[in-house]
Image: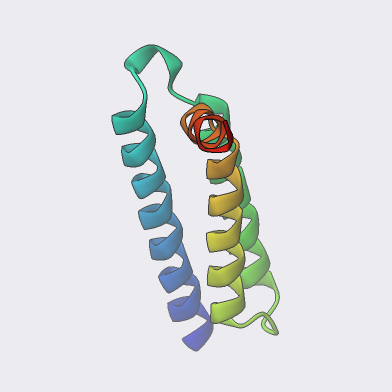
Length: 91
């Protein structure tokens, strides 16, 4: 029962993180240049982390949440609004 509750908590975190990524990207860019590829990578990565957490009991919930949070930041760093902001900041 504990394993199922932890997996459900991870699923909720993944859905909320993905939704916040979608909202931030939707407000940052116009409708024609939404990063669908990045969104797909984020969804696939979330599914992989969820399946690993469900399969292996040894993975702690905090490790799975932390790894997905870092993965979300990594995916967000390579979107066009962030790259443009970094270009403007450096130059």
